[in-house]
Length: 640
Image (cartoon, rainbow, N blue to C red; front, side, top):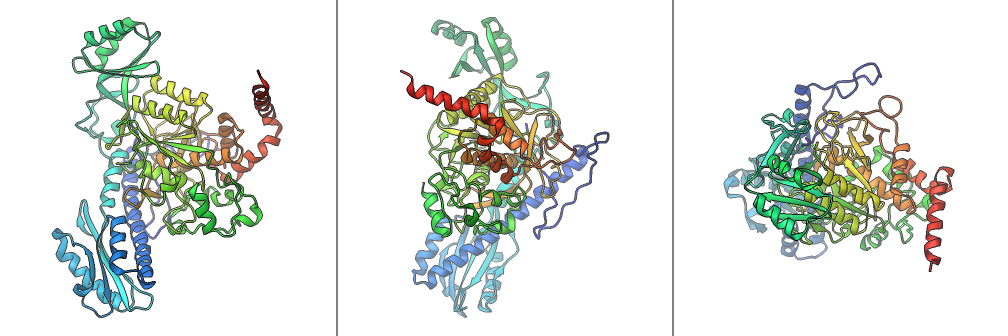
């Protein structure tokens, strides 16, 4: 299973992590050569940096929220209504106190209760905050508490200093990010979740393998010990299916297309695989688990109001690029300029001069779901699907899918949070991983097929396993044959072993780099890597109205997915293979000259890719395909 972290030299007032230089010469070791000790140390350092950055994101956003509350109060809205509404929207705001200057704090208007276990510390910091705001100063205390119960106190004076807002903010997000990244970065052995009966095996031999150290996960796959996936050459009859159920004492049978998942309590996977060989099957394989790959239209109208100089066509593309967005344009999302180093690096803003995307090009995020109520996402989300629960509620209970979705499509220019790479592309959230961050081959395959059948033009897959599953490959081919562009994270074990689905030929595989265009130490590599994208301490949306910084190829993949959506928005006639080719040919070469196994064709470039997409219909290289499509449409129209 993947591990999920990376490295960076980004400076954000949080310290600098420096990594050793490596040669990119053909006859010398390249940037993949990291010792086990160094790789683990780098991951731990980056985990700490991600947590610090998440803390900073939380504090920055809370300062903005406090200022907005004070502005509402000063404009005449009732104090109690403003505080109550903010607490309702932000669970993390445990206590909010509006206080007049020199008024005792206990006499102010209060909403919420102080944490009983840390009441003494909270009270002490509240007193400090009151002194500061009465002097017209902003105040933030150090963190206090432990584990899930970490807090800080904030105080913000009004513009005229007549009153202030002081409160206690619950930072359980820091614990969530730490716990999430420890598992996903494989800084701890694969978690033995009680609900999974899991075997850890060597991917090549399926021999049992004990995983008691993070490094043991490299080349290790995990599967359900009492389940197998079977594709018959010809579907069994009801009589034959009943016979099979009786002979293996099956307690459940699931079917997707021509493929069956059999589950029994009486036989283990290897015995089940031996049993099914007599049934003339195309394949029988273990039921593998997949994990996330991290180290750990209403919107059109809103955007037009926010940017009075904007002139949009119905598709969301720019109709006046010369005056629409200048090269100096900066989105007004309040966390963008300080934290989103990744978007300028790949020329995203300049790319918006050519297209900001189109609502007609739907992107599916096959992952842990998405936070359906997040204010920076909710206008961009289409009705999705929860494969795990078999319902239409793909609510994210992990955080990973919400973060990935934000990179692609967080609302832009809405004076809130972060900016996504696309302005208008809608996201189809498909939940295939459960609350542990794991999901089966069946659920991932079903999610891919569902997304392809429900209008997705691009699918992001920030998940993986080292096992080459025929079942999953069938689902990948199904979507690919429907002209879907499939983008997947390569994995985070710093290994050349191919991971799936990224290594399938129908998929565009993504490696991760840092802010200095160095290979992330965790990023997998190999001949199957197509391109590289930023994947280190990426700021994005997080559940419960929050923002977090995560690292990994999971974070790199959605950058490429968003680019594929922009490319298809600029030229809807492009086939998925043409989209792949444009993204690769427009990339900025990194490392060894030409394509290499560490960076693929290089770092994605939004401007060049979108420009190539717009010009492709005029280029000779794409003329035969374009003509073929037009002739097909004409023939179809007049056929009778």
